Amino acid sequence: MIKTFQTIVREGSFHRAAEVLRYSQPTITMQIKRLENELGVTLFERGKTMKLTKAGQFVYHRAGALLKEYTDFNRSVEEFRQGEAGVLHIGASEPSATQRLPQILAAFLEQKPNVQIQIAVGTNQQLMQMVLDDQVDFALCHQPEPHLFALCRRSDANVELEFHPFGFERFVLLLPGDHPLAEEPELSLEKLAKERFLLTPAACPFQIKLDSILSRKLGMTLQNHIEVASITALKYYVQAGLGLAFVPEVEASVLPSGTIARRMDFLEAGPELGILAQRNTFVKDSICEAMFEVFRRHLEQR
Image (cartoon, rainbow, N blue to C red; front, side, top):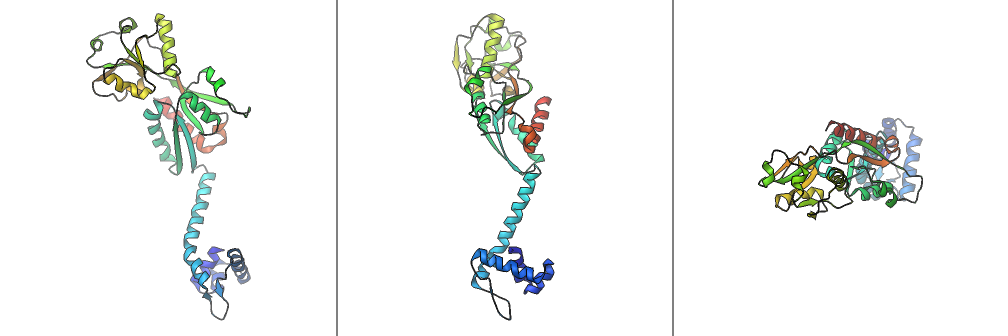
């Protein structure tokens, strides 16, 4: 109706507007009456010549913006229907949130530039609860420990989680470049046993895996340590000379000055990395499915 009104004003008559729009003149008249009834104003002064009322002038000045907004709205809905637009809520744990996710998102947005993305960063437990509560569509994290399933619950018993694995993290040893062990050709756990270590909290997937390796390999734990709640901060504590740290290899891709990373042959693979989501998430949502494919290609190539 707004388009009809705008065409009448532009063409100067109901008759010309009917020809341009390929409507019958009664249809044009009926649409204007409907528009006037909906707006509660009179748009045209009735007489021999077509003349806009004050209300008609006001509506006409707004008509272009309204039509553009409506056209944009229709296009956005169509893009959403075709999986080209929408809002994607992604959760991620460290170090993936810092070291992996930016490159993955850049690749995804090259394909779907109209998708809006919101990112939440948290621990495995926090991300599990976010997925269950529909706060995020899915999360890039590590294989949740079994006990977390008991801690994270939702009243809807029909909601199930599934984990899509993409591979294992790798550990490296991070130490100051001037540390006496930095020049050692081979490093063993026996040589490291007396060193002070920087560790993440006991609930961290990396720490759980590291504790398991140390316990099985040497029957030991690292007694002299400083606990740091952020795995991405560990390398800066190493830089400050506060101790050594076992960190995921991706975290050592860019090191602070004065620090070095060493691979340790005795260290097994770290925790498994993958995508956590509600069951069938990537079947029901085309945008989620497209993002999942980008994650899969990126993580399997690393």
